[in-house]
Length: 468
View 1: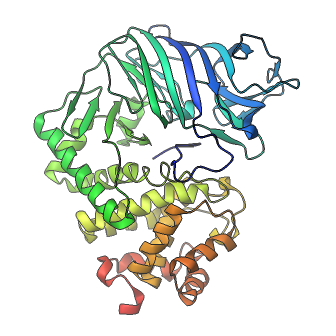
View 2: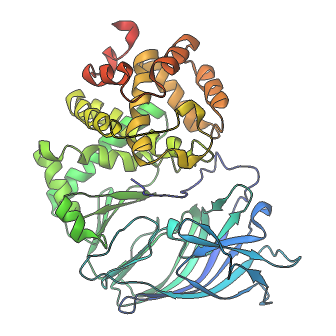
View 3: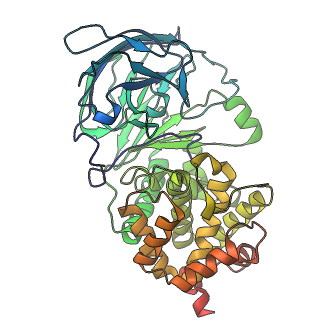
């Protein structure tokens, strides 16, 4: 799950007409693990017109200069009274010039946590622990085009980076084979969100799974390969789209792992095809193989991150309902997969836990009155909305719900409830069922609509209210 995730990747099928076909990012990046420093000289080309005057960069990175492809230096604002976009600072070009190629030289140093006792960790950190660097697209470790009107980062890009990492034994750039080098050039002709991981641990590719930063046994690799194969097969059938690429599982020891271990919590994020998982991947595989009931969360955890191939990769949500379309849909699909593959009892237990979380939700804006994405907080997006979606499935029936989910995947993000309603009805949700669901379920976390759903949760064949 992505804590405060900002953006992921666009599908070529769903790219807006305002975006360029081939955004390109090139340059040199130097990292020093012992100093926890990062230096870059990076150019972004073919930027869309809507993002011609702005770019973003991690707030911990200091801009040395901005220039065009010819080397001509450009004036820019953002030093004081800075506009902040999450973990990034927003910079604006000053003057009439808005070159197609924008280059930035920058440098920064970050805290390093060799004891993994940092105060927090999330996808937007440029994370150092003395043994590795982790920098996802959300951390903005390279400059990214920025649309000031929609306040969106334009991220998917082809790239060519020459990376030097002092102290690294291997380097990995998202979607490319990892290499046992401390310096090398990495090029992708496929538009992807840029993610960098460099470290000192092992890595290997076996079958359809690549494991980074941890050594696994053959049995553990096979367990993970079979698990992902079953999830992908289910999603293919349910959504009608095959998962491209094979997963790259990145073991990240969180910079706050000491405290996560004490609380026995874990987290992960997807930057497809990379799925980053905190703690030990081997332990996840062992628990899956043993079918440990105390670790029942592992299957939907992996299924959730895989679902981001669809909601977050093929379709990049935006607008007020972005968190619903990104995280809630991934969680809904994960539980659908868990119910179909593991069984309805395990899925019911997960929904029961969500219901307990919802009981502590407090004041919130009903789903049909959302006007801003930040109105959908963590508990709202990961627990409450998935429950609402299953309540809709119960009301309208699994076949109608499946068509609605496929429509959400294939369509631009609805920006108003009226647009969401139009899409639902056009996909086959009966108007009566949509209205009943809205009246009975939205706006109340203690509604019988949800409590009865969890109490009677079963296989999809008997989940429809019309069959009861």
